[in-house]
Each structure stands twice: as C-alpha cells, then as structure tokens.
Image (cartoon, rainbow over all chains, first blue to last red; front, side, top):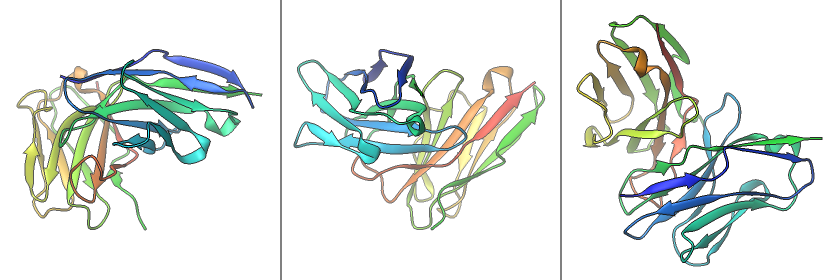
Amino acid sequence: AQSVTQLDSQVPVFEEAPVELRCNYSSSVSVYLFWYVQYPNQGLQLLLKYLSGSTLVKGINGFEAEFNKSQTSFHLRKPSVHISDTAEYFCAVSGAGTALIFGKGTTLSVSS
Amino acid sequence: GAGVSQTPSNKVTEKGKYVELRCDPISGHTALYWYRQSLGQGPEFLIYFQGTGAADDSGLPNDRFFAVRPEGSVSTLKIQRTERGDSAMYLCASSLTHGTSSEQFFGPGTRLTVL
C-alpha cells in the first residue's frame, strides 16, 4: 500500500524568506510523486511532478522539489516566497495506473 | 477554454435525504475522477471513469454512494440516505487519458453539509 506523510501541518514564513515543505512517502512499488496547491476557494492545481529521470524537478511559480529515493522524500522548496504563495499544499503519490494518494496538506502562511 | 466545473458549489441537506452532485469535465477528457476531502485532510479517491464505465470504484465508502457518467462526459455523484459524516468537500477532476503522465485538472468542488 502507498501512503504520504506531510510532516508539517502549518508553516508560517515571512515574505522573501526561503521555505521547505516536507513530504515522505511509502510504497512497495515504483512511485510517481506530485505536489498540488490549493488557493482559497479554488480547485487544486498541479505545481510539479516526478515521473522519472532527473531527481530535481522544477515547477510553476518558482517551486522545485527533489526526489530522494533512499530517504523516501519529495520535499518542496522555494528560495523566496511571496504573499501570493499563501495556500494549502498537498503532496501526492501514485503507482502505475493507480489513483492519487494525498497527504493531509501543509498550510503555508506568508506574512510581510 | 473552460476548466472543470462542479454544481452546486454548496449543498446543505438534512440527514437521510438524497443528494446529487454534478461534474462537467474539460471537453475531450476521457478520464474523470471523484475525490472527497474532509476538513483538515487531503483528498481521498472515491471512483474514476474511463469513458462511460467506472474503471475503479474501490474508494466508494459504502453502497449509499453511487456515480454515473452515461455519455462519457458529465458525471453525477449520488448519495442516498445522507449521514452527518458525509459532510465534506467533494472534488471532481478530469484528465485527457488515465495514467500518471496525464495531468488531472480539478474543479472547485462542492461543499456538502448534512445537518
């Protein structure tokens, strides 16, 4: 069975500071990893995904994530956040042909 | 073009009533997914359709939940004899095809409240 653990439920940061949102997964088969963002009153939007190849994945809005197979992690990073990055972030995993399994989410709050 | 739309955006009902939630996927998308998101949790998979058929309904919690997609486009999630525990945000997503390489596009959701 696959599962996802997002280690921080809330992450408060100041504008222009770097941020890392942590995600660990467990799976007995090859995995595909995703980060989604959910802005208030909007649907989930794909930030980035890892399917294969380079372990460093770049996504939209300046976010990137690194797949670490030995640590079973897929942490999301941004070197300098903006107020507009305030949102809920979800890490998700799937196997080949299976549904997405989501973590519980991390609320990123960016203040000035 | 238009994204995934869901109606209604909010639904309040009484315990024991029947409800229908509608999802209009992106035109041309053959795969359609339903998820349920409870407060403080991530979305949980319910069911997915490839075309008109339910390819995987393993996430439906019990037989009170049922979904259809009769013409391979619009889908309706039906909940019979609603219970207070059914209160959640119900999300719909569609993708061009089913598979990890095909991005799922999510709708804004329907917030269901069972009193």
